[in-house]
Length: 239
Image (cartoon, rainbow, N blue to C red; front, side, top):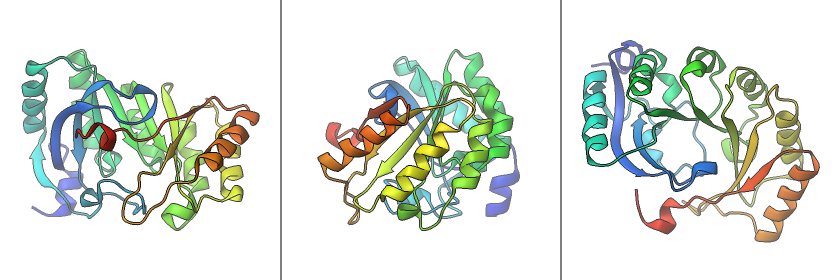
C-alpha cells in the first residue's frame, strides 16, 4: 500500500504502536493513558525522542478497527483517563482521527492530542473533539527554520485545554525566547506554558539550571502561567 493511500484513506493510517503507559510530559504527568503512535512527521527536530516515527512512510498500515481492538484490549486490563494521539505528527491523518476520536469520546475516554502545531486547518476541524492539546512551539535553533507564522495560525484554532510546550536546549537564544513569549502572549486563549529541558539524546544538551530559571522568570514577567516539567519517561524507565 502506498504512503499516499495510508494518508488519504480514512479507514487506514500508518501506526507504530498502541500501548498503555504513564504520561511523561506536561501538566498531566503520571496520568495513565493509552498511546496511539502514528507514523510520519512533517518536521525533523534535533531533540526528537522517537526518530523512528519521522520518516514518511513509517510504521505499518493499520485499519481503524485494529486500533479500536487494541484500545479495547488495553482498557479491559486497567482503567485509563485518555487516549493520547501522538507520533510522529498525528494531524497528518485527519480523516482517520475524526471517527476514532468520536468513538473514544463515546466510550468515556478523553482525547489528548500531541502535535507540533503546524497544521492549523486540521486543528480547526478536530478541535471540538479534543479535551487536551499539547502543542509544541518549535524554536528555530532546534528545527532549523522559523515557524512563528504557522504557530500563530494554529493558536487561533486551538481549543480550550491547549497548553504550549517549548523544549529548551543549550542553543536556545534570548531572541527566539522573546519571540516565543510574544507569540503566546498574543494568542486568543493564552495557553499554559510548559518549559521542558531537552532530554540528552544524540548530542542534544539541555540548558543549565540557572539558564532555565532565567527563561522561566522572563515568561512569568511576560504574564504567562508557566511550569517547568522535564520528561519523565527515561527517569521512570517505562514506555
